[in-house]
Length: 253
Image (tube, helix red, strand yellow):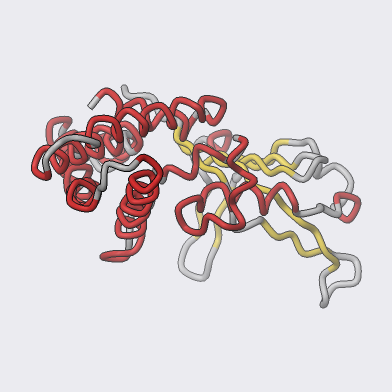
């Protein structure tokens, strides 16, 4: 379970991408000779710890904003993590059945089983891809594999797309770049209100094409591009790259 918990750290701290490789290697070593049942149990424990550490901010959302009691909020996070870990448990059991005790063949089989677990978690029942392993490699040497790695490295693809998007920074109005913008007011046909603590909801556009996003306890980074607006000769259209990196910085209180 310790390996699973450590596996989640690089999602929030991408500079520790190498730690994730060590954790997965540790899991692979444990299931390399384990029987099917024990492999399933190892995958379940690893996945539960991984997702609890990667989605702990749900506790804050349910406890602080939902008014749920602390035991119920903690239990809900644990239950969700355990349920979603069934996919990794099944994948490790499948690996135990398919392994051939030949290094390179088993490496391919393990990778395929891991991919199946990630895909299942990301798509079945509408999916819950939070804390996907690929998110940790947005800045790692493995980023170069994104074009051929598909959904397994979705987080890597997000970062690569943002990095390769060439922003037309000059098209933004003067004063927009390198300034922190706060969300102060909301209005629609149904309601209008001033935003409490606007300093908790910010955007920061950098001249290098990076967009830093804060939404209360959530943090995110993405690329952005600017193009002339088709309907307004003096305006512009701002587009955030759909491939972004997200992390969560809530503190338990």
